[in-house]
Image (cartoon, rainbow, N blue to C red; front, top):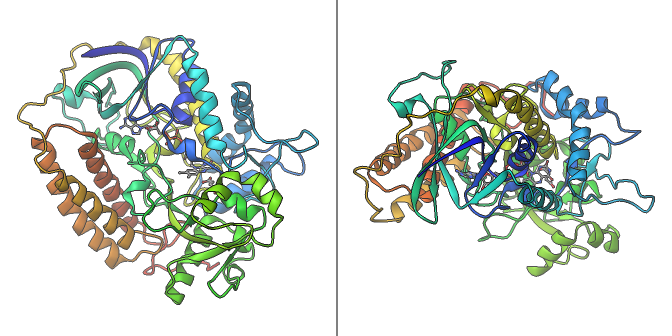
Length: 523
Ligand code: FAD
Ligand code: SIN
C-alpha cells in the first residue's frame, strides 16, 4: 500500500505530538507510532519541565546551570535560545490543557532537581509526563487534519538509496521522501510518501540491561537516520539516572525522581552514612553524572548492589502528597518510604547525542527533521540538566514546525519510489537468535560502556558488537521483517555508535568518564 501526506511524524511522544499540532492547520498529518498512541518515554516523565517562571529565578541562572551541567560542551547559543523561548512553549501546552500543580497562593509549585540553582521545575505531582501526554493526545485526536496510526513500525526512511542511487555520509544532496512502515495489524510494509518527515522516536535506554525507559526506547530513529547516511553526534554521552528503584527482575526499572532529592531526601550507604559531601559540595543535588559516579564508586568500595535514598526524616503527609506514584509503587513491594529507606541504583536513562540538527530541527538530510530525545541539538553538551529534555522537545518541535510550514508546499512528492522488497526472506525459524543477541548486546553495553569506561573495555565492546552486527545483518537479509528483529538491528547500530564515539573521545568529560584519561579537574 502507498500513502501520501504533507507531514509525516514518526513517534507520538511530546516532540511528535507538539509538532503535529503546530503543522496541522497547514496540511494533512500522519503520525505513526509503534505501539499504543501514548506509549513513550514522555508518559513516564516524573520530575517535570524546567522553565523560568518568576523572580528570584532568571533566564541567566537557568542558562548558567545548563552550561555548568553540560561540562563545557553545550552550544551556548542553543542553550540561550531554548531557555528563553521555553517559557512561551510551556504556556502553549498549558493552553492545550496540561495541568501543573499550584500552591495555596495559586502560583505554580516549582520543584528543584540536581544541578538547578533555583526551584524551577513545573510538575503534576510525580506524573508530569503522563499529564502532558494525555493533554497532547486529546488535542491531536480532536484535530481533523491529524491521523494517528498505532502499531505502525517505521523500518527505514526513504532516500535516493531506495531508488538505486548511492549517497555518501555528509553529502548535502541526500533527500528524504517519507518512510517504509510495517503495519503490525496487516503485516504489510507500507510506503508512506511525505513532503516532510519528522523523526521523533525518543531514546535508546534498552541498549542497556538496566534502564528507566519503557520498551519502545530502542534508538530506532537514530539508527534509521545513520543507515540513511545522516549525521549523528555526541553518542558517547549516555545519562545514567542515579536513583532507579533497586528491584531485581523488574525491567524497565521504576524511577525515583530526582525531585525527591530536591524535596530533601538524602543518599546513604548501607550503614546509614551520607557520602555525597565527599564528591561535591551540592551533595545529593549535584548534577547527575557526578551523583551516578559517586554511587557507582560507593557500590564498588562496599561490594553492595545498591545504596539507599532516605526520606524518613521528611514530613510524611507532604511526601505522600507530592509523590503519590512513588509512594504507591514502593509500598507495593513492601517499602513504606515514610518509614524505610529506598534501595536505589543508577540505570540508563537518557541519550544526549543523536541526529544532528540545526536550530530549526533540520537534519543533514533534506526534508527530514528531528526533535526530542533522538535529536542532538547542542543543548545538553556532555550532560543534560534534569528536566531540560521536555523543554527541548517543545522548543524544537515548534522550530521544526515553523520551517516545515514555510517550505512544504515547494516540495514535490516523489513518485517513483518502489514498494518494499521482501524477496528471498522467510519467517524466523528461531526467535532465540534474536533474543540471545539482544541479551548479549545489553550485557556488553552494561559491562563495558557504562558509567566508568576504559580503553580496554571499549575495545572489547567493539569486538563483540562487530560479531553481533555481522550475525544480525545476516539474519536480517533472509528473514521476514519483525519489530523484534528491526529493534535488535537498531540497538546494535546505536551501541556501535556509542562505542565508536566513546573510543574517539580521549578525555573524561561529563557523562563520558574513562580511567585512561582522568578528568582535568576532579570534583
Ligand atoms: P518519546 O516520548 O519517547 O516518544 C517516542 C515515540 O516514538 C513513541 O511514541 C514511540 O512509540 C515512537 N517510536 C519509536 N520508534 C518507532 C518506530 N520505529 N516506529 C514508529 N514509532 C516509533 N525529562 C524531563 O525533562 N523531565 C522529567 O521529569 C523526565 N522524567 C523522565 C522519567 C523517565 C522514567 C524517563 C524514561 C524519562 C524522563 N525524562 C524526563 C526524559 C523525557 O521523558 C524524554 O526525553 C522525552 O519524553 C522524550 O520525548 P520524545 O517525544 O522525544 O520521545
Ligand atoms: C526525574 O524525575 O528525576 C527525571 C527528570 C529528568 O530525567 O529530567
